[in-house]
Length: 97
Length: 91
Length: 299
Image (cartoon, rainbow over all chains, first blue to last red; front, side):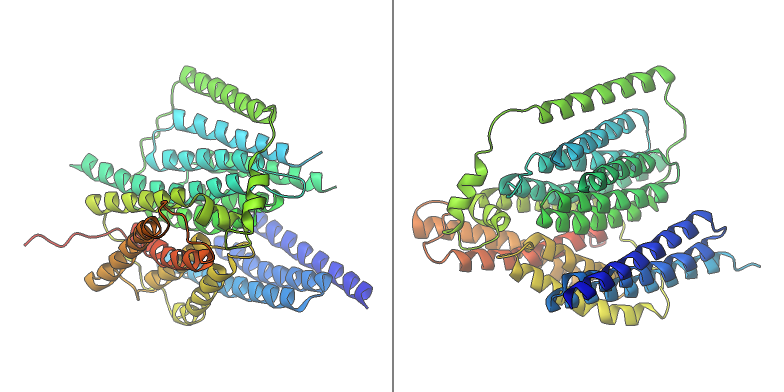
């Protein structure tokens, strides 16, 4: 059972890292700030949640799961709010169009 | 092959970069930034020297912790002084 | 295998630091500084020092980044005259020479470490299980007292200079629900970090920094603006920490005859009491350092 959990955890963590790499590529190559923000917030929160879940599976203990879930929820929450605030300031700059 | 000497070189690199920037730029914010890099570079060297195979030495860790907290106080005071100097340059 | 990770991390630290120091845009430089601070926190974890990693991430990267960003928007940029080539060459050679000498001196320093044996044998009687907390609040508690005095001196300097208070703009509808979730989590996690610092990594400084972060979120949302009442409360909290610490030091002198020598068997109570006062006081001091302290207008 724990070997299966370990493999599932490694798979989840790999998917999370791939998503973070895609987010980094998006920030590198997308043209405008708002589109970069889009790639960053979506892929970062999803990638981090997958990595947290994978780490909890590899670890196998309940208190680690709770701490990692709290970490992922906080990062997703603050990432969403910060994305909203940054997009808001950029959109109001383009007002005259 | 222990990892601590890698971080000693990284900390020394930070110290060198920070000192170069301190000597060649006049922007006050960049100078405060360079001072911060200098301080955390030295903190990294101190912490890397505390590394042990099984047990990390606790006394340098306490020194680095104290140093980080003192650094934030000094940075706040320096920034207040910088804004005051900036205000005087206007008049 | 893990050496490859350490080498990559160290290269990343030096690279982001160089980029942050070399950019022209000041906000980008401050962002580079925050990223370098977080990578350095990761390196502290690799070096086996989680307490210092927590403090560096919260105070060194987070709060210092907020302070620098606040000032980056208010300071005027300096004229962009480049230094003469001779000065740059001289500075580069001296900086390179000094950093190589520093690395070589630390790397080849001989001698055995005296402290780990002393700390492990004193840990059982010190009242806590975490060796860093034991060193900070029992063996070298005098240094911690002076550290609070240094923070207080920075606060006095900021009070004398009295920079302008930053005015947060209206931040939209998402801020209030965000604050409703984050502030209780900040308070809860800060208390948890304070309490667990006795046995696992944590402690007063990390808890105080987290609480200060909560205060700053309140400030950004427009709810904890430095009105005279908030200022008075903040100043009282900041003073209370230093006062309680100093009173505790004098009390230990009266009770056991030696300064800052806790009475036998009661060490944990003294440590927890001093740490709680320190947490609230550090949070108040960091909030006041960020907001500046406006003088009352002269009548």
